Amino acid sequence: MTEGPQRQVRADARRNREKILSAAARLFADHGLDTHLDRIAREAGVGAGTLYRNFPSRESLVEAVYRHEVAELCEAATTLLAEEPPLEALRAWMRLFLDYATTKHGMIDALRAIAATGGNPYGDSRELIQHALSALMDACTEAGTIRTDIQVTDIGAALEGIALTSARPDQRDQAERLLDLTLDGLRA
Image (cartoon, rainbow, N blue to C red; front, side):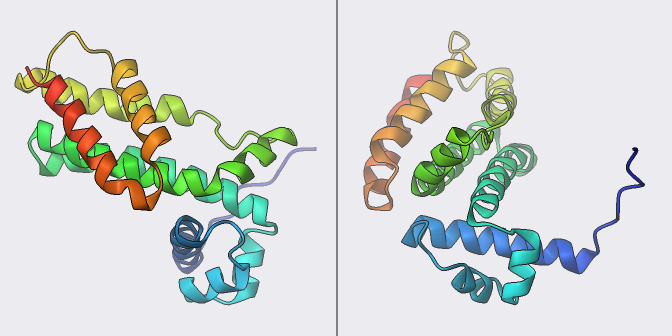
């Protein structure tokens, strides 16, 4: 049996989905995964029915929030490179990575539970993030602002280390200092 043509999603439905994902990411980061779904709907400015139509379970919402955060982080690389000099774009993106890590930190238990039941919430997120970081590093290398002997995976590991040790919102000052140390070590 073959599926029919894909149904077009209305613009207002796409906006509502985006509002739900943004509100859920904020609330999960600030208050944890026990945040009531009705609160997320209110914060997003939509009805509970709209939330449940898009995300029939908490797990589906958590997975969608995670994937949305990865997509926004990766899309930001292109935007930042168009608006900023390469090194400043890299610095701004690394700060966004810390924001992403803070949100992910709040969802990590749920993401692990989804993975334990056979789901794959992470998909190709590592590759997507490395591709975005690579574009930023290539622009910096071309501009002569960073060393050429550093691999994307090295910076990825450094960012993951910062996130692992300083992902909580109350640790942001430390994370910023570690980020500055990392950037200083990258300079040409």
